[in-house]
Length: 246
Ligand code: 6GU
Figure (cartoon, helix red, strand yellow):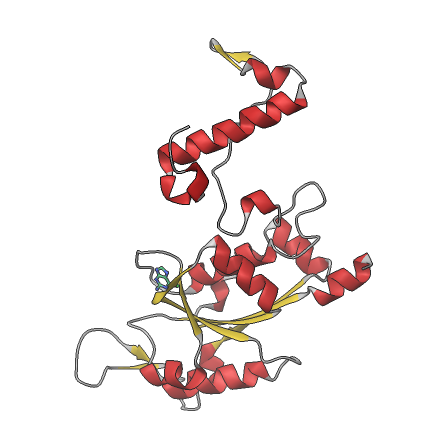
């Protein structure tokens, strides 16, 4: 397949639905992302949920039935917004609701989703959450970025965009491949240590193997350090055949 064909097929589109659209321009101007947008590999559209309200005060939230603290995002403007945004391109796209109640985002999910879909509609929550009927009607994929609570889904939406965009062929440049087998499909090990000049600093020397020019030996050293690092810090990431001590 030619380059042009590959890049057309893999173009990603994100529509971000939020009450705080002003949070995004700074993030979107970041180098890798901005370059990808300019090269036509990614399109990102940010929409203000408030634009889909119909009442005079642009009311988006209300108090929960049954009482309790906080405010709930109302079903009507949210559903109207998602449906209308879905018609703005030729595919409706995968609706993703950012919520601490969701499945935890990890590299396996990044890769699965990047392979399955090219358009993503990211719905950012605020306050105490969405009216349950938003979920019942839209049947979104519910995603959390970890077991902690954020003030809203916006930062999480940026995390999803950032990790998905790296999967587009051509975004990272030829020298790096996000699809490298040893670093994907849940087989990810932690990185090996890296060094650059000077060869000695405050009495600490660069490991001699890295200075020797024996590429097979360097490869072995790095693999060994990766495994060692992973065993010490994140043994949960080790593949089964590496789980016992060498
Ligand atoms: Cl996606 N949203 C919020 N509000 N908190 C979170 C989260 C999302 N993921 C982890 N914590």
